[in-house]
Length: 413
Image (cartoon, rainbow, N blue to C red; front, side, top):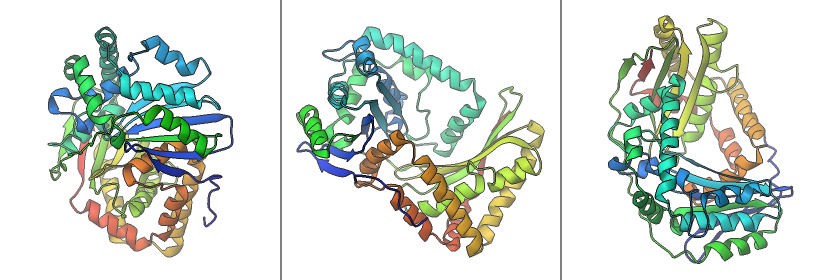
């Protein structure tokens, strides 16, 4: 995996006078990808407005000073493009893709949304019920619900604990003025990054960004995100009257800035990654037929994180599955892989990175997120180089560190 992925033109980073950071990359093709990443998510809400970040993301499309909701939704669609958004624990992204040469249309619309959204009461009253239905749809899906409820327990006592969507009660209490205050506080130049990947030259892209975003006034944002308190180990079983048991076993980890994240990524992929040859898939599904699905996931925040192992099985098999998982974890902590076997683990993971990099929109988004979180561009080549430097002892050390406090579990029956 020593050969670098051809990035064509390297991305270039700029900072406007108002503090807004911009990353532009010229790329041959028929489509342009442009978005705004905001350093604000559900973690940044106060306890009386849970779900507000996601609510703002939904209702930012419901009207600005010069556009109604239907004009916003059709602005990119009329040229065959798309306008979309999502919210996570620590970020919100509003993004577009469209046939090339619609860059100005996209940038003007994004600037209008992040600076001039008005959250008209009539529109957000309608959208409020849409979001409540979205919440109920997740509650009806135990394989989704178990993740949210596990995080509530694992991050108890912090802003990371509550559901990104909020609750029906909290959503119904959100008003237009709450949305406006959130927008004014967080959707400001120093707290945002714009990414542009387009056939246009970088100079031309930057000129268009400046045209629509340079007039936004500078506002200094000081993020105050208290670290979550230490995890209090738990083992809970909740009866939801479902046919299948949905279980998560996991523990807390370090944050996304920690260099140990690279051996953690390898450990996670080897233990329960998406491939059929992952340890847990072989042991639980292929050898014993105990589960249909088993997967391991890592979610890193700015100052903390989780590694979780999810499996769905017959309720009578939960204890047996857990014992097998604990045995595999103990083996990772207690033994060091041979260099030859470990090289195969690294090659597989790097190959997966290369395969996933073919999704151009995801690569464009990663430019914005990299600049937002790290202040620089860390592309796939950087990640591959870091992964290839990891040793078997590094992975064992990380396993011992993160699993030293034991595993916590939640099962929905």
